[in-house]
Amino acid sequence: MTGTNGGRLRTAARAFAASARSPSVRRVQLGFAGACTAEWTFTVVLSVYAFQHGGAEAVGLVSLLRMLPSAVLAPFGSALADRCRRDIALTVVSVARCGTAAGIALAAAAGGSEAVVYGLAIGSTAAALLYRPVSSALLPLLCQTPTELAQANVVRGLLDSISTLVGPALAAALLATRGTASGFVAVAVLSGLSATASLGLRVEEPERSAARGSVLGGLLVGARAAVQSGPMRVLTALLAAQVVSRGAVSVFSVLVAVDLLHIGDPGVGTLTSAIGAGAVVGSLFASVFVGNRRLASWFGVGVALWGLPLALLAAVPHEVPALALFAVLGVGNALVDVGLFTLVARLVPERELIGVFGLLECLGGLAVGGGSVLAAWLASATSLRVALVVVGALGPAVVVVSWALLRRLDDTMAARDEDLALLRRVAVLDPLPLPALEQLAAGLRPRQVAAGDTVYTQGDAADGCVVIEHGTAEVLGDGRRVAELGPGELVGEIALLRRVPRTATVRALTDLDLRMLDGDRFLLVVTGWESSRVVTGEHVDDLLGRYSPEA
Image: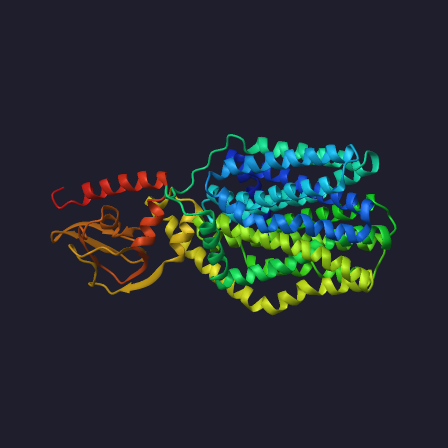
């Protein structure tokens, strides 16, 4: 057991080292940390501002008013952002957040109209909702394997967790000493730092058609990708349950601190900081014990942990248990993040990824707003304890219903990992980032060829290629043997890339286990990236020189 734990700790340490070594990953992660810290600080400060000006009902209403327009616009904003480089989009979004937060600070300090504050809050929230889908779609482009992506998301989750701790703690300190205006100033500064982290960053992205479709068309493509896939539907339903609970917590944190525990306005920041502390613990747990294993199941556990503590809090309404239970919410948050962002990035084609993440942000924004209104209404119509129990039961109930499907998804992704490992052995595919390989792996089909049988015949039309998983084959040019191929080698790609008939016959020397690739999918992926296109061109020239019957 000690050896196993030691190996897990070494794996976790390598995850953090990998993020620190890569300048691009490091900058994306630091920018994300600044944006998340700004968001948590903003949520706490704005909730207290609303409570001071209108009570618990105002907290729920303001949450809905800022989330609803922002959530509706998020998918359109994501589709629009996808029409430019994602690194540039990150910087623009952070600058917009900085400007709106600065405007709110000025309005609050001058005692300006609440309508002005809330109107700017809608703009600030819209910018914040755009940051995550763009960042989430950018990070996979910097990874080569599923393990790298999971590790990057673990690090991202830890930074998110730390921001969940630091943001509310910063808000609590500023609220206790200087007031709400200073809290909004802090949001503006953090957003500016986030913009600085991504400024000048350049990441290779797949080429897109110069005649791109409309923003609405891009939105519809993302919507289809999100709803046509069974696994994506399951993940989306569970995410909805989690963010409803999250929205409710933004109200419950105020009501529990002020009305149940009687620890005042700074207690709102203290309770929310407990979520951050738990999230740090959860991220460390995920880095050591989760990794890239059974992510769908762990995601379900995380959703359940966003509900159970709320129900238990109704039975133990005391400060120390409340802090511990809010920390468990944070553990659930860490597990949800690493599972969701890794699985979605692997299930959705790269060209549709930012649209899907935008839709998930839309769902999240609507559900957060709905959850906050639901919590405020239940607390008013019944009691705070009843409201905690009702909302707390939602997440666990959805997880129980979905558990078998989550386990099945884990089995599917384990099989996909084996296909990716095979593709990584193909030298010509080495320049491709993980999203491109995922697209190829999703289309692999098995084929068995008996010893002595023909895989391809010279002169035939080319409609695909294969990767040898087990066995050996010979290449015959004009009837003469010119090469022998084995496991991990690609067969049939020359005719596809040159758009000509088969240039040679390939015959099995032993029984072959092959993985078939559709020609259209192969060409779309390997020619869609500049670095890959250069490598494949050199690869074909080399093969034609080596395997030519005249050579």
